Image (cartoon, rainbow, N blue to C red; front, side, top):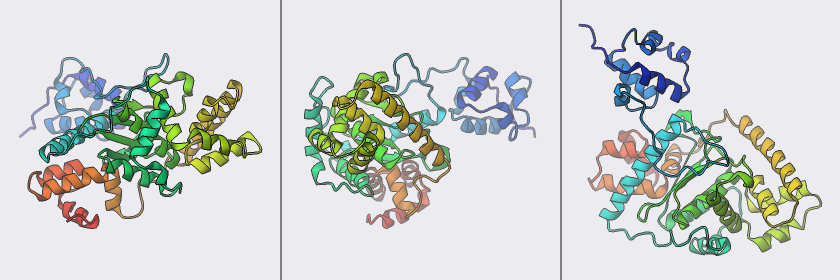
Length: 384
């Protein structure tokens, strides 16, 4: 018996292919008749259309629409610089929707378990003194007691942030799919404000120093009740959204307090040595250092532009050299999984599953793991 055809819209199929950035030549390796499907001469089977929708990262029903849907992001896109619009990749849209679902689940869990609202966030706005905001954040997580050990400062800072009720997730791939890497040129992180389930996501494809800065940048977003997507550091301060500029200033003040920074700045013999010393001392990226130096009026604009251009080239080389390296790898794979969705979120899903509230199937979906491995996951992390 012949398999039934899927009466999909050829125009939507072409839109989906263009959106995914996949050529028909590549698709033809799996679907010999893809050109005929696009031209409308033939139709795929129902199973082929379902499989194709997964590859193109769209809901299957989209293929039957008359016109391409208007895809709206769940949070503001603050990567829109002066006279620039950013393309949103299917992988990133899928990520945002996935993290939004995780946040919604946790909010329901928090309310069901009578958690209090997170009252430390949303107290400020971008018209407030950035130093006051920085001090409030630093005090809340006792940042001054965190050791400036580059091997531990990111992990320790994330733990402090999670301890005050904020979800922190960190990944360099889409879920557990190592074939779908998150593009560092597309975003560095994002924040999703909610009184019960405030959430920070960090692109773990970046350097550890840059991830640390992103953590506090996104934390500032929550402190000022501003959800948003943060872009690459390759754009200098003249091209940034005003909210991004404010969050950068707050993060820089937390990680590099002005008085300490000026003391360390005066210890170098030349600007390149000084930047390297500051980078090592404060555990932040060269971009953060150069912006701080300029904002404090310690260098002229022409020197800033020169240093930023050099840092940009160094960063591009770093990313190219690390493009094929495995991210989030090594060590206990279960700890890697927990890093991807965060300790607070993992624990909530485990407890809800053990109590019989959340199905194993749903828990596996939320944690991006095989449902059969949930109890082993919990045992490895000491959750009983």
